[in-house]
Amino acid sequence: MSDWKKTKIGDFLFERKGKYKPNDKLIAGLQRIEKIDFSGNFHIASKPSKTNMILIKKGDLVISGINVAKGAMGIYSEEGDVVATIHYSSYTFDKTKINVGYFKRFLKSAEFIRLIEEQIKGGIKTEIKPKHVLPLEILLPSLDEQELIIKHFESVETEDLLLNNEISNQQNLLKKLRQQILQDAIEGKFTKDWREQNPDVEPASELL
Image (cartoon, rainbow, N blue to C red; front, side, top):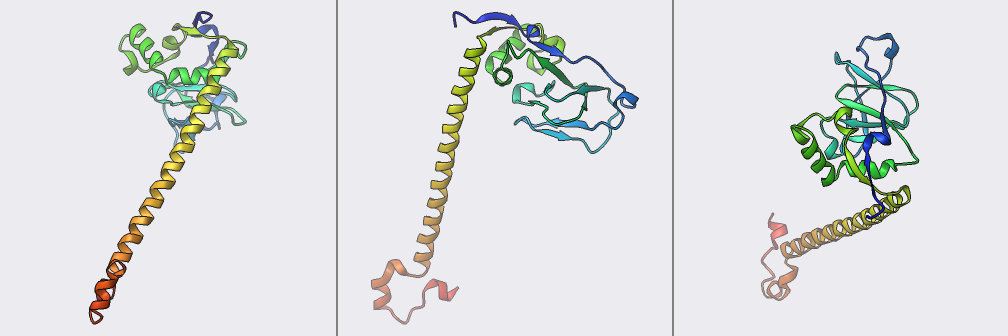
């Protein structure tokens, strides 16, 4: 970490300026983002809002001010502009300084929460706005190292996914085995000798 530099987030992340009344003609007809889930997926609203709006363009990093540390953020990748309420914030970023995938992971890290708790009154319970995020100073690795870190995370996540799939598969096989054992027991297959000695007694499956 010797070559990691203390850097203000505002040196590579830039708020998209502009606030709009919900009935402003400049945003008339634009769809509104209602929610960003913790996987970074955008959900479009079906009802209007009376809250002031921000504008979001393709490629912007959009952050929820309420649930950012839980992962409520994402890169808006659809064609055409959209809006969101002022409980969200939208940013462009300098790709020569930051790998946005790395930064998104940082925003979900314990280090980000620690910085918020240290530098912002109210800590993570505060609705996080650009005025809170942009002045924060973080230790930032080089772009090459950011990309290596991302590749490492992705490798670990792939292994974790494969392991979870294997565990799930084994659990399904175990469940089927238990069901088969129960079925065999009901049909009297585990008491063959007893059945041969008592041919006039029906198995439980017949009685049921």
